[in-house]
Amino acid sequence: MKKFAKILLACLCLLLASAATLLGYSEWTVSDARHYTYDDVDAVPYNRVALVLGTSKYLIGGSPNHYFKYRIKAAAELYNSGKVDYILVSGDNATVQYNEPRQMRRALIQAGIPANAIYSDYAGFRTLDSVVRAKEVFGQARFTVVSQAFHNERAIFIARHFGIDAVGYNALDPSAYQGIRTRVREVFARLMGLLDLYVLDKGPKFLGEPIVIGGPIPCQALSSIGTSQPCLPIPPVVPVKKPLDKASVTNTAVAISAATATSAATVTSAATATSAATATSAATATSAATATSAAATTSAATATSTATATSAAAVTSAATATAP
Image 1 (cartoon, rainbow, N blue to C red):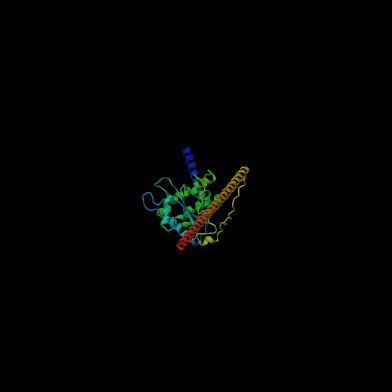
Image 2 (image 1 turned 60 degrees about the vertical axis):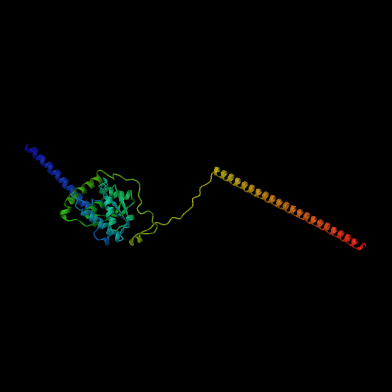
């Protein structure tokens, strides 16, 4: 019985030693990514997008979460310093009541960040999901991660594994008393991160359709440092000409012929109408001239008759006067 207990104790000690070795190895490996993190905002290199890793605004007891507060402050510092042009907030969206990206977006807007410069990733359930989706869904192969230093190290380690050129800007850490549980959890999270990458070969839970951050903005950076970055050339507008098939050519010819015939018919009708109008006008003028001539002849005849009558009357009167 004592021999069995010794064997069991030896197995337990071996298991604990192996676990401690793995935890130490994961801590050492992931911590090496600290060379890509920055504490001073002026030293952070320019990237077009900052990825803010999600956390809840409030703790379970309802008190404010200082991890959330300091990450929002760090993201605002990057934007206001011209180190980034856009901010991608990524976190868990488990329920309607618990929505990390929505909380972060509202906090950034309250901090003075324009709403059109903030994009939301509602499927950032884990750090791995947030980092990989920033590349595969939002098209960013280079960005700045915003979180506390220990979290940035793990996020950058994951990013480098997937070929992403990521750096980190370290937000302030809460006091040791407030962050003791998070630090302990981070030790095991680093070990699980190694297992996910090298043993389980895990990827994001969801991907989806690509989302373009900012859209194409040819040669127009949104920060002073961004002007030194390459910009998209304005593509020339080339009209697309579609080849006409036989049916289209035949239909076009028929349409042109019909239009020509219609135009000819219209011209003929107009000419006919003009000729008719001219003939009518000529006939009217002839009739009027005839009537005028007849009237003139009648007037002349009447005048002649009147003169003759007058002359006869005058001769008669003279004869009468002459007779005794």
